[in-house]
Amino acid sequence: MKPETLNFFERVYEVARQIPHGRVTSYGAIANYLGANRGARMVGYAMNGSHSKDVPAHRVVNRKGLLTGKHHFDGTNLMQQLLESEGIEVIDNQIQNLETHFWNPSELLSE
Image 1: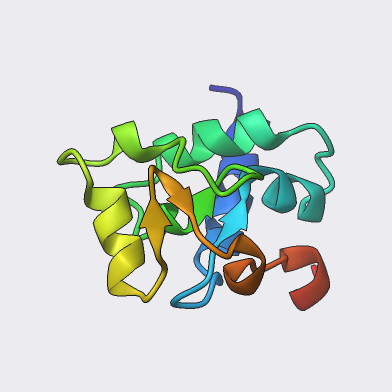
Image 2: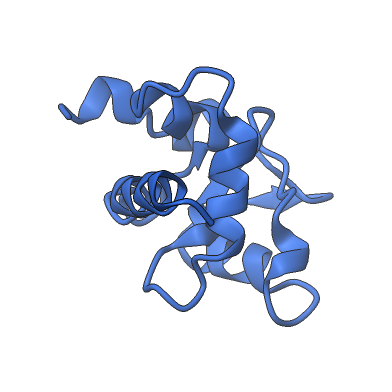
């Protein structure tokens, strides 16, 4: 990977580490915060490689609240179990009441 890609991944991890317990954000919200509009897929790639970096990747979902990254977790339902342990209800791989649990880094952080 190019150095600028790795730098972007590290910036993604820094944002993800700030997602509060019991809250979630989306790939696109992180991309927008980092000034990478249309960069949601790149954030997804970063999250796929984050599991050895102490990043709460389970708190990052798609814009509709779907657990699209769940197949990157060990076990069949680990992502859902981690979210539920934080008080977030998940039904059919989708977060319920997403607007209640959504954390927008652009509104809550200053880069």
